[in-house]
Amino acid sequence: MKQQQPIAVLGGGSFGTAIANLLAGNGHPVRHWMRDAEQAETMRSVRENPRYLKGVKIHANVEPVTDLAATLADCQLIFVALPSSALRAVLQPQAQALVGKLLVSTTKGVEPGTFKLMSQILEEIAPQARIGVLSGPNLAREVADQALTASVVASEDEALCRQVQAVLHGRTFRVYASADRFGVELGGALKNVYAIIAGMAAALGMGENTKSMLITRALAEMTRFAVKLGANPMTFLGLAGVGDLIVTCSSPKSRNYQVGFALGEGLSLEDAIGRLGEVAEGVNTLKVLKARSEELQVYMPLVTGLHAILFEGRTLTQVIELLMRAEPKTDVDFISPSGF
Ligand SMILES: NC(=O)c1ccc[n+]([C@@H]2O[C@H](COP(=O)([O-])OP(=O)(O)OC[C@H]3O[C@@H](n4cnc5c(N)ncnc54)[C@H](O)[C@@H]3O)[C@@H](O)[C@H]2O)c1
Ligand SMILES: O=P(O)(O)OC[C@H](O)CO
Image (cartoon, rainbow, N blue to C red; front, side, top):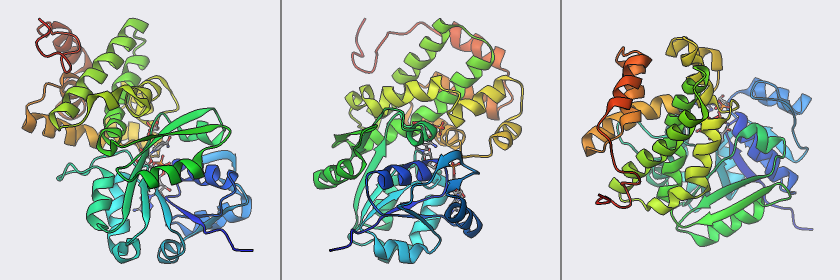
């Protein structure tokens, strides 16, 4: 009988582990690549990732590995679950091995300096690869615990979308397809910033009206920015836009929300990140988004306010005062700019 080709998952953190397990549970052999040999050995022997996904049993079809070149050589379909800060550095030296491969980024971040999204970096490193993204309301812990979940695979390459749907679809995980790779990926990166704000609001005991205002105005702000970049605003009404924004802004399981909550409790940014000990992409995204929104002259008061608190020494009270007293605006202005 012909042996099934393995699927690669790059990144030994919580999301890499959750995706590897999902694929394995669907009957696929998985090469789960991580840089840390000790972690791989632990995962091989105890069948758990105690540092990033404690209590979740690693499926027998998952093989934790540390040889990146061999992993890329053996696999055609490759899921990338590396932090945005590591993706280029890890994959650039492997450019030759990526020719003709199907690369699916699950990383939700933006590169400082270039403002490139992760699939755009993959495209630059490997112009002869086939590229897609997977994004949506997908907290790793819940995916791993088999909570009913939906996600979006986005690519101009329809066959890639169908293949990703086929390998991930299962009893607990539904995958929708989209041709709008840029919009889907941008939504996933931007929402992390607003989750920090939502976490702060929760720590301060703010009410339900406030939470709703924050999420809705965050969506307006994200969409305004996306439209300026030429993205389709309708994509933001889907799972990878409003769906991901809701889960990340309402769940204490979100690491970005946790950073915000710690800030709301009075911790410094450094201590909040230290206490988390995992990736919170929103902090870096905030810096690059603030700079880019100024260059493009897009009105983003929540981004400006959070940046002022984290990096310009403003107090939360000062920023709330400024936001609430700002000139009244038109609702849904990014769709009907001349509403009034
Ligand atoms: N965790 C989630 O719920 C979730 C869901 C969807 C998408 N994502 C995205 O997935 C990406 C990865 O996040 P995560 O949650 O798995 O992170 P994590 O904090 O759980 O783990 C990060 C992993 O990356 C590894 N790493 C760090 N630097 C590296 C390098 N230079 N080379 C190789 N490995 C390196 C660490 O060793 C660790 O294994 C992020 O962009 C995140 O936004 C996360
Ligand atoms: O834990 P966070 O804040 O990185 O969010 C995880 C996912 O992006 C939620 O979809």
